[in-house]
Amino acid sequence: MAILLTKGTKTIVQGMGKEGQFHAERMLQCGTKLVGCVSPGKGGSDILGLRAFNTVADAVNATGANASIIFVPAPFAADAAIEAIDASLSLVVLITEGIPPMDMVKVKDKLNRSKTHLIGPNCPGIITPGIGKLGIMPVEIFAPGRCGVISRSGTLTYEVSAQLTKAGVGQSTCMGIGGDPIIGTTHRDAMRLFNDDPDTDMVVMIGEIGGTDEEVAARYIKERMKKPVVAFIAGSTAPKGKRMGHAGAIIAEGKGTAAEKKEALRGAGVTVCDSPAEIGATARKVLDGLSG
Image (cartoon, rainbow, N blue to C red; front, side, top):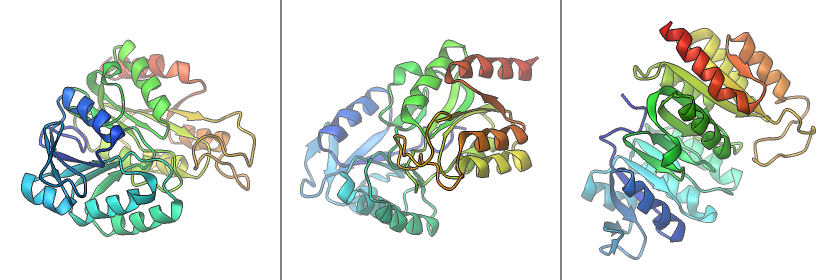
């Protein structure tokens, strides 16, 4: 059973500008089941062979879609996400970066009162190798397997997945959850999904400085995780008080340091790598230990 993205996932694309069309074409090429798109004012037209609708509700009613991927520009992306949640979609992937935090507060409030699972914003999306992707990642670096991947960093999602593939460790599902302060899916949320997934034997988790998301995940791992976890925390050399790349990657008042996160994870029994270059080989050893 794949996590969130399955053979039964029928997806609409919200936002069919140049970026949306570029990635929609590549999602179709790797077998993702796209059933329509939402482009206000263009309802009834055809874009990349997909029927266009003016609203998410129209698209869902006509196609039976249960998921969406959003490429809407930042000023309007939160409204697009809320429209998708209001349509009771099971999965929403919000790719857009630069969404104001106050806009995401509204999305998060709506999300908490729904059954929708949202990934993002400011993320590469989700891929289940062999089934499809809802995102912007290059499919060539992934391979089907039984290792789940969770990452706040899009770039490290690609780097780690390529390492795993090279080491012969295929992936069940890879999820880039995004690096903004307010996101739909946290490390703990994703860890719970992998813990319950019978097709995942181990998890690789990529975190970074800022916030307490990784510490919260560590508590869950210690108390409930039944599968081994390998982790890496980016930003060990970052100066305090300086934002590093992601909006959420900032250390304030002594909280959110790499050292604190590593300590919490090690205390939960996680195998922590000090360099991203070690992740593939370390995961291979852990996986071999399971079969041995």
